[in-house]
Length: 179
Image (tube, rainbow, N blue to C red; front, side):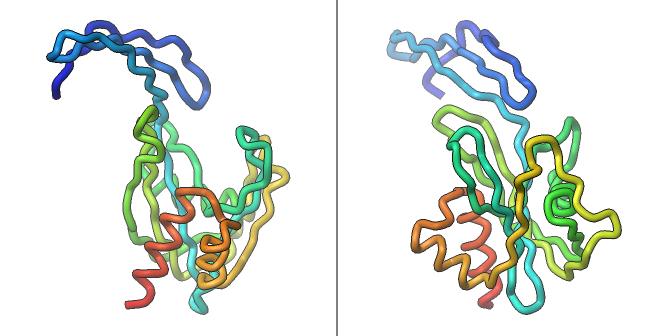
């Protein structure tokens, strides 16, 4: 590119994210500091039943201080493959498992300041898991919501589904299932 990194300083290392401040010099000779939130990434699941109903979760999200309707999703564990993460999160959050999996895409959530990449999968041939749900600390208020895919699209249009990863997964899945 048109810059070089002069110094890289990790100013915070937390359970989920780290904050790195890079001191850079552009080819022009100007200097800048770039703040980057490092995140391990995650997986998102569009779980689709034969009748085109989908599974969503409604959960309280602390950063925005409200309940958010979204697709099941979660953070990648160290060295975990995105598909395994998607399978794990579907079971933990909804109590379902799937026989067929298809990767729809991978997205950067906020590339202006964060390196988080989310892998979006479609899961089909759903059945209840014999293990049920396995909610983590802080997910006790999570509620599983089953709705027609077309209703989810309408909720996006009405600004009732505002989560970016869910919008991407629902719209890609809906387009793919039309074929």
